[in-house]
Length: 408
Ligand SMILES: Cc1cc2nc3c(=O)[nH]c(=O)nc-3n(C[C@H](O)[C@H](O)[C@H](O)COP(=O)(O)OP(=O)(O)OC[C@H]3O[C@@H](n4cnc5c(N)ncnc54)[C@H](O)[C@@H]3O)c2cc1C
Image (cartoon, rainbow, N blue to C red; front, top):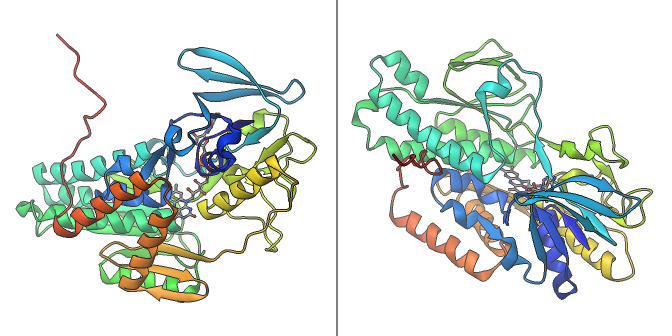
């Protein structure tokens, strides 16, 4: 069994296969638990604690660290590029779980000047970038430059954008206590989305609560608005608003992994692999696909699954069973949705019950703790959260990590 991709979908398939074993090919040796990424960016959580090492999560699986670059669906082989060279791996059953990449649009300056928020590296980079803006603002000689450094624009008001903005604005508020010279400088946090509401995935009353809560903190929300252009020092919105800023974060959705287009697979117009209700790739008896890279029909819904970890996890459980026993159609009815808004506030919809404020926050955290694999990971996260209750966030900027100085 060859599983390509060690993210939510691939990692869980291999874990569910248990002692039946699997070979995972993945670019990282860990599974990233993305719902905790905003907290890792803001310093409530140690970044390492929102990933789960695949060798521990799937103790019976073999891991090849690398990227699949070619697939031969006739010969049942995959070409894998590793740091040590190229190798060919044979498979009897193939699982494609290659995930997604940030969905970009032809906005002038986007690829050069906007930051993404998808991977652990993105989260760590963004945290250091934000802290660096505070240092640069403190050193700046004029008020205009200070204000520019303290303006932050997030484009895309889904979970990732809203949670990341809420958490990072909390981080800067905490940090600014140590920057007396910046006390009078106005801070600007801006959330932009082309849709008419923020968090369109959740019931309107909870989305409205989130918008009101963010506005109370002074966060500007521009809905029905697009990003027109970005440059090194400015973001321009479709409604004419010009924001002097050095920080534009692009969190406007995902697109299936583009490598899939290079392989002879049936894809829909968005580039997702088309699978049947058993999660088998159409026209390929021994190839399966799931997660963000697949168009997965759901027998308990009239729409294909959205790209979320809760769906990837349920698909993975079904697929592991289909790979080892009589296959059955996949069906999952969402039990709820959760999101944090920083400052001990959150929103949750669980079994039709709508929760907000502290209770919403508590339920969100409890849900993630329950879902996170491995007891030792859960304990590390609880310890981080407990420490965060008593101490303010760490404001050390560690941008030089990973860039050691040369000897001599
Ligand atoms: C910031 C953020 C917050 C989110 N919050 C939530 C949330 O709160 N709730 C929720 O339900 N969902 C959330 N999501 C969505 C969720 O993360 C995805 O739906 C989920 O990760 C999909 O799992 P996946 O395995 O399909 O893809 P991924 O988890 O992205 O995994 C893809 C894997 O494929 C590997 N890979 C890619 N190319 C190759 C290659 N050529 N060869 C080998 N391996 C390869 C990658 O290294 C990666 O390990 C969030 C996403 C983000 C970015």
